[in-house]
Length: 189
Image (cartoon, helix red, strand yellow):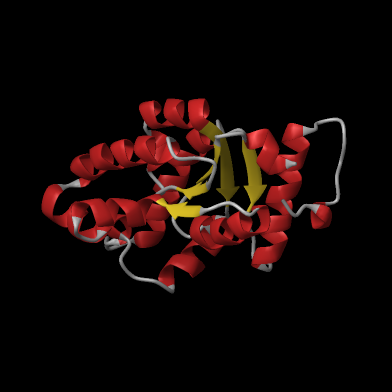
């Protein structure tokens, strides 16, 4: 049902680093029998270097320009589940493109859990600071009001990935059929 309602549109996951966009996105795509695409990986492929290297060598502004172009190109190839970088949705033009070509789904996550998750992985250019906790709080303060503009919100919390995927499927089904409360376990394709 979700797949047919999407048509050629995409489900676009937004949220801060560590919210689970890639991990949940892969599982959601598999559940809905859709391709999964990670925008950051596509940017790295197009640039021939890592996101961290792009930030370091060319700056955030250069990265955001490329990110905007790559996301617009990817959204022409739907339907898919597309995980975006944490700052992508902050760009007005990118938000408009997402709204025109898909459905935005915000994976909302607490500061504490985000920090727990991002500490497990390096390579987060925006957290290369003396006080990464303060940087993360600043990102939350600036970005959460914009992420709240997304079509749907799912709370990413410290539970199994399948639970978050079930929540996402439930939110998608409710979006497409608002008069019903379907059991997410029954969604397959």
